[in-house]
Image 1 (cartoon, rainbow, N blue to C red):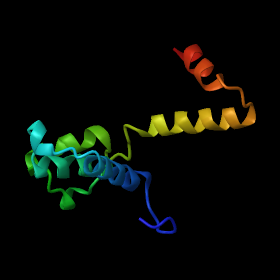
Image 2 (tube, rainbow, N blue to C red):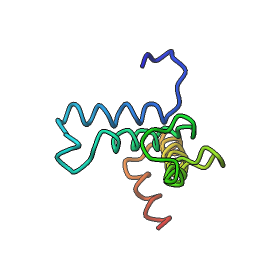
Image 3 (tube, rainbow, N blue to C red):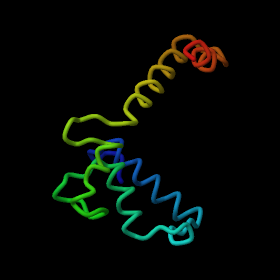
Image 4 (tube, helix red, strand yellow):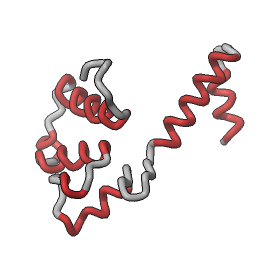
Length: 108
């Protein structure tokens, strides 16, 4: 993807997933996965609309709602992105080497 192209973070996540498989020579079939499984993983990351889903049959579409629910707008990884963004912002304001780890330890 070109940096000036409109994109969502999900699009980049799918690109990273496919790039890792390619560059690390990860072959899905070696792990018992099919091309349909790889398609499904890409679709649940990107939040594919029901009419565009090809990775699972219609009676299993509920699986798509676990990671990226296009009906409710809930995204499983969104809290993680918010947390990372907050940590980075805090670190930039108060740059100490262990500020991120200290914040993590306090929240646990």
